[in-house]
Length: 429
Image 1 (cartoon, rainbow, N blue to C red):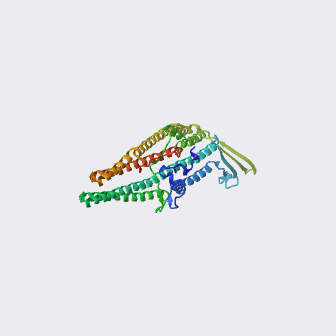
Image 2 (cartoon, rainbow, N blue to C red):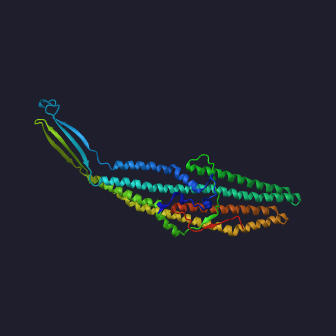
């Protein structure tokens, strides 16, 4: 069940950093996904707020289980009148003690309702925690994405530098005009600009990640990983079976108990409470003491409680419909995330196995042909651009798969790493 899932285990297995999380060689200044999750779990105010809310509900429970207060009173009769009743000569003094005898199980109903609210809060906290862990994984993925784009840009720069060097050689040999060199240098400048943008995006992503635990000036470095490493996941039927244990549906069980407690409390109001009063009266004429007492019972309590009972019954009946609607929505979200993961995973694998190897061989052949004067600059440059664009497309597909995987983990509350990971290394033929 989801209550057995540790916060650090739920999302610490994002494949793009899986290898680095387990590595013992990570420096203290390097932030792993486990570290980020631990900081958020310890410092995020949304989770710490539940402690204060729990204290409020505990105080409200203590107030709800108190019995009605007793009332002490003094009654004076036959005083300050006229004639014989003038002054206090004939006054009679009565000391009274009054209270309310609750009937219909009101005390137990209030206690059950208060406890149900406390129990529901713990489930809400677990759901909030899973949402926060998913957000940590998403922001960490953005940092890893910026690092991967930085690596692709560095590869592109290396390619463009070879092109510039080759163009200069041909210019010196009189086999190519200066415009080719300038065009190659412009392409190199664009690649360098892309590298600088990736570095800036990485800094912004680190700032965004650190904001989750309130750090304003992050000085950590995020552990690098291979975002093209994708785990194998179960089929849709197996994942759908895990939905029953998610906090989002578990909340309905607590909500059912909560609404049942409200209905029980509403029904208890149909039974009227008994007001009682006892007292001791001093009889002025004989100076004797006598007991007094009274009982009163409100009329029409059942009729007055009717609308509240009907509302509570309707609210309880609507819960089953709400759960069915939520179940459909969760399944639809799960199916969408599962489908996106499968499609992206397939694209990453096909690019790795079929597209990139051919492009890289074609680029190498184009470089040899250009240096030999068999083709022009544009053909080689076009192949370089195609290779870089394909690498970026593969990376975006892998990132889309990771985003879908994070959503699957958030929905199921499971790590989804039982099966071997599929490594989609796209930098080798």
